[in-house]
Image 1 (cartoon, rainbow, N blue to C red):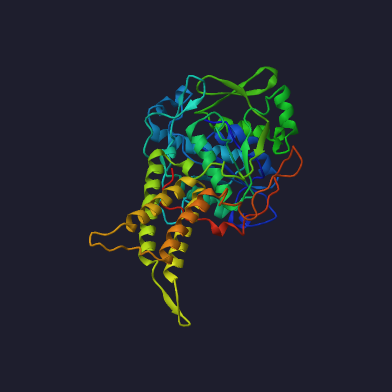
Image 2: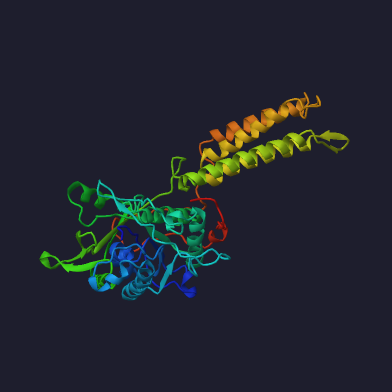
Length: 451
């Protein structure tokens, strides 16, 4: 279960509409079946009704969800059967909300081309003493949170490539209530949005029940969009009832409908759903690729960067004395090439990972190789003679390391990057620049060691 979502237009995303610049195309990214209806069902139905193209991606099948009704008790100890059952529930919910384009991440249409299909499993959660969700101690190897980050981003990017959304919607940074799958869905959706400069919107949890100063702040925030979905409330209620294994629709005082969750909490069904535009970070303070990795992944990546630096340092040291003759004069071509190789390695790592850690590890390997190779060999000779090219090689590498590691930011904003919506604080749709010209630049993240 969950509590986040995003806004913008909706409707089936078929090949005939995916590339139509006249239509709004909104991609919703959710963690488990039922999340899409609880937090964004009204927005989805309203967008579809308005003629927008809506695609819903569900990252897992919710195998670890708690089953409420006793007539479905047989599913409580059968994760595989529950997964199949919840597939049926979300199919019915999509029908009631009017969505024709629903995909499970890792399945056809939501999988990196060339890779075999896979199912990302529910990662599970435990309730902490402070009342919020936390990770389970026994994470399944096939769990969504155990998958390589780059692979997951690449799968979602396959959806972006086919749908070409004008906006992507998912959870905020804490996933609404810290469920690990929700947090991971946020990271993946944000990364996919940043790759092509598509605006990203985060669900504002509890916006409808906000009071006092909090409600006033939301009302005056120009980056917050609120969808009034009262006219499609019957559609949302029907979709909620489709998810009967996970939630129960109940009557509340005053004629309102509520949702009872497996742990007993009851919340009113929201008919106004709010979303906040999340701008792209403009400094290195934003989350980097390194931040998405597990501890083991970070260690492995740093070791590889260190080794790469050592290899480049060795090759550069061996070749930096090489020359070619141009118009009868020697040109230190080996020195120039060696320096360019070193700059490309460090700047590339800094830019791709958005972190100084990887470039720093490569710099250590690079300088370490120079120091080692500078020493006399067992036979008494040296690889680096005491001449001008050698001094330029050593000083140049040191200068490159200082500049690349000290530069404030190497990864600039994506061309045609995402911009916030206009000044209105209330809207039924989000205008955004089509990403058609940028989608072809999506990297193939097969095997990228990120988690």
